[in-house]
Image (cartoon, rainbow, N blue to C red; front, side):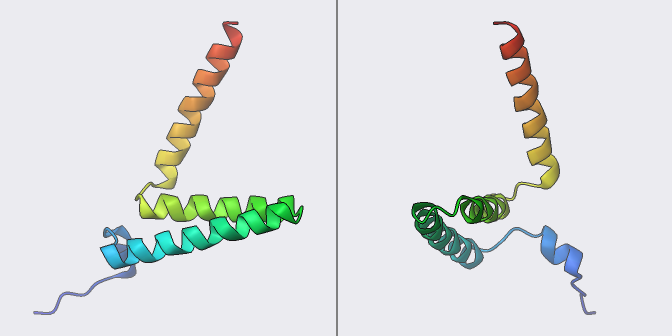
Length: 86
């Protein structure tokens, strides 16, 4: 009996340590690149690199888009509540 692995099941499995280490290496390089483009005054390029770094960190830490949205909604609600109480 052969077990078939689908693309969906591969995406749902936790990354192995080699993949995590590789992504962390990529993140480190992107952080260096962000510093370079920021120093050159390319703020939009730096922002794009920030987004790429954030996405890779989400992947490394196995955080879903739904979890990020929930956190964002919670922080936004807390910020609004704190701002209105002052």
